[in-house]
Image (cartoon, rainbow, N blue to C red):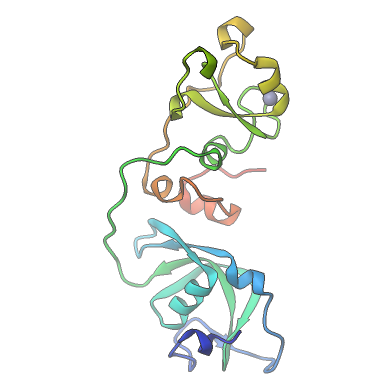
Amino acid sequence: MSLTALGSSSAAGPPGPRRDPRPGSPVPAAAAMTAACLLLNATYEPLGVVSSRRAVVLVLAAKAEPVDVSDVLCHAELVALPVPVVVRLTRYVRVPYPAHVPLSRRAVFTRDGSTCVYCGAAATSIDHVWPRSRGGTHTWDNVVAACRRCNHTKADRSLAELGWSLPQPPRAPSGSAWRLLGHRAVDPRWRAWLGLPDVA
Ligand SMILES: [Zn+2]
C-alpha cells in the first residue's frame, strides 16, 4: 500500500526520508508496516507504542524523527525510508500517565527477563511465590516468571519449605515506560530506551 493512500501530505520529503534509488521496486512486506514502533517524547522519554504505519506518517510529516530503524524499506510515492522501530517526536508533548502498571503475564515476563527466577531457564509460566491455594495474592510482589519444571516441583509449597530463595524480592515495576508497556510485548530494540537490561 502506498503512503499517499494513508493521507500523507508530504511525499516531497522532509528531512529524514531519502530518495528511492529503485523506483518501482516492490512494496515492503506488509508485516513490517503492521509492526509496532516505540514512540519517544522530544526528551527521549518513552511515551508509548504506535503502529509502524503511524510512525512512518509521523516521520513523513516531520512530526517525528527515526531513532532506530529496521532494514525493511517503506516506499512512498517519491521516497523510500526504512521502517522505524523507535521514533522521537520533534516537539515535546505533555502526557498524563496511569498510576499503576497492569499486572499481566507478559509484564511479569518482561520484568523478570523471560527467565525462571528460581533456576534461570526460559520461563513458561507464572508462579505465585506464596501459593494461591494458601492465600497468596495475585500481586506484583507475589508473582514471578518460572519454568515449567520449577513450577511443577514447587507446587503449593513455600520457598522456606523447599529451601529455595529468590535473587531479589519481586516488586511492581515503576517508571513511565512501564506504565505504558505493562501489557505489551517489548521489541528487544526498545529495551535500552526503556531502561531494561538486554536479554540474551
Ligand atoms: Zn526453573
